[in-house]
Length: 221
Image 1: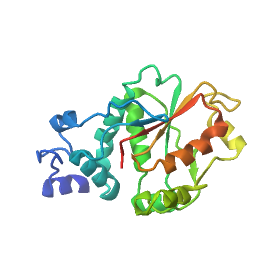
Image 2: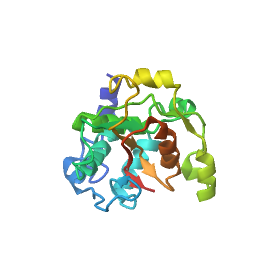
Image 3: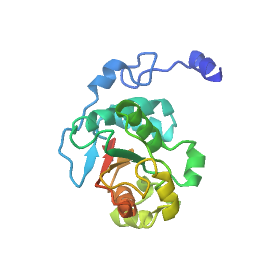
């Protein structure tokens, strides 16, 4: 009810054209540029941070907590994945959002990467696993570090996996004896800067013995 009242008092306008109704209208969404570059190091970049509308959407989503933007941003990531139909499908892929530390999750109220993963899952029917990769280190936001060296040190040993018996239980849906053999992990995050966060996450996931690990982000900051 309060959300309805707030919408009436403060109507939502498109961030692109200021049309009332949604944070991003249909026409502006279709104008969002899709990054068509071939992936390097298994990193898929959906769009361009230098695009003013993309930058504004990401900022409003992450720092103004506009959760509704998860939908159009997630759909943009779906577009990127659809360019690689032979690599990703619901039968061999698993979405794993980059987790937040519990302190930052409490502060923000939601994990922006997890909401993006859920939107991708809705469209492509790829399952989301959000309780395998665990954030153990309360790091500074990467944008607040001063250089590449600090960003790498900031992310060092920041993730872990649960104990093996817990992993077996959580992955029993895929294969009772642990089960990522033959599966493709798609790590989901919002923005990649130096890639330190994703690199640490990939290293942490290596013991699961997935077929391959890809990284999907909205943009490179």
